[in-house]
Length: 259
Image (cartoon, rainbow, N blue to C red):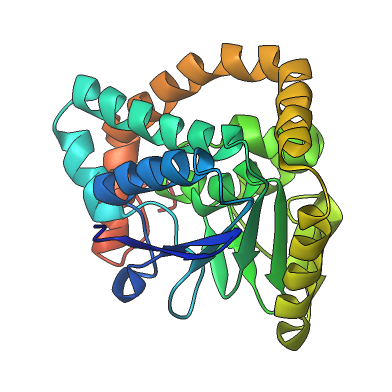
């Protein structure tokens, strides 16, 4: 059914796997569309009560597939705008899923991967996991993920991590609030299983209503920001600096603003 993700369901518990391990689970237009479909489908399944999001292979997700980003950016601003509408819809779909969602993170979470994490209700990571908002080092802007990141970590910490683009460890991600807890790899699965059992003790309609309530109370700021973020990333991807940043990445050289 899917080519870039996999879904599993064991009675009340569903798992969505990012499944492009050969490219570190980097997402492209196909994966974005499949994630939207999977979360919409599982979100409306009356049997499913909890959804976990994971990555196949050595890392959770390397963010956006730069080959895909570069191809869409060279097509022009309008095409890039449409691609980013789809990406924004993906994050919104995960965020608005009525079932509780848990991101289980390992290895690395780069760029847009952190948007998927922040859009989930809960996030846990192994202690060796690395994180980064690497967009600025490519001349890009983490626009579509920014509303979810701000909700998680606040403006001050977001500035520190986004403007530098530096890598940071899971411990710092937990301290910032990007993830709920950092655990030893051997303890990660038991913690997730414990949380799932706690969630299954609550009424499924009550959980959905609570999520809807909390989102409603904080929705105005998020809804107002989405159109701006879509335009911002489209501008960055189609700009000369954005093109230079991605080209430098592929050519394994420093971008011209470092020379």
